Length: 315
Ligand code: COA
Image (tube, rainbow, N blue to C red; front, side, top):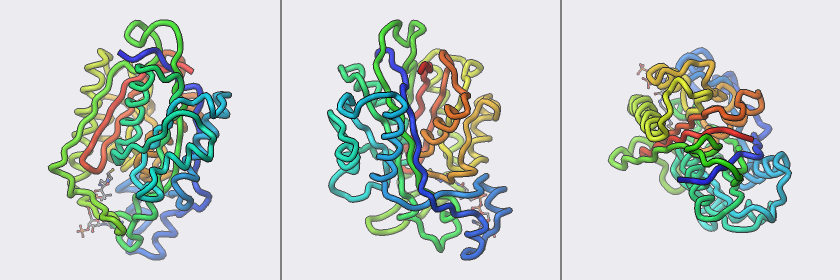
């Protein structure tokens, strides 16, 4: 059981350089029509550093919450593309923001943000009051820009939420916070999406696609079941933003319609650990989440790894 908690602030950061499908047409044997039809992506942002993007997003979250950096107990930075192997990028973000408390990176690929969010709720259960959870990536650095199978998909960005412990009823008795979750991994499929040190990503896209739909549905269903929440009660589904066809297939199998699903990948591409918080923040900016709403977040990615969380919202 985790204590009642609310998201008091959120923020995003996207590098200013936009690469459209038409830009990619100039250098790859591809077309805007193919990319839109097969992925749903129209444009993506590239550039910056993970520390820079994460700092910008986290600073915006702190400002929105009206919280001082020295009142944060923990920073969890989900990233698969740390700026350096050593040190962990969260230590740089911690320094730039002037935070107190701990800082650690979480690498669970595209499931990383939900892994970090569940870990943040766990931190509250052992006494933390405020935890910054950030997803940030610079995938463009490990993308082979001559490989049309991956170059059209991946991009850069960051988003952050500030999770704060609050008083009142616990989540299982009507209060805000974590109602249920599901975390998993299947390392026997680790070679489906790989990037060696100093190299670029290679992927069996078709097999990842097939597994992604199944894993998202199974993991989301397991989390809902543990939360004792029927799928009809989900006000907002925030899936990993890899491919619109994966999102639509998973949503339709779960029974969650498009109007209750958060989608940003048309504008962001696949930003791995940043994709779920970017979609969540976009929904928050559009006032699509209200107090008491049930939010289902579900990610999958390299590993394969997956993570789903069911949260009763309050701000
Ligand atoms: N532009 C034009 N044609 C392309 C292309 C591109 N960018 N990429 C692949 N193609 C071609 C292929 O070469 C193939 O041609 P062929 O039929 O002559 O062999 C054809 O399009 C179909 O390829 P396929 O791989 O079956 O396409 P797809 O519909 O599966 O779409 C992905 C490819 C990568 C978009 C899709 O498989 C996918 O999104 N997979 C999951 C990726 C993912 O989520 N990764 C991140 C995990 S976090």
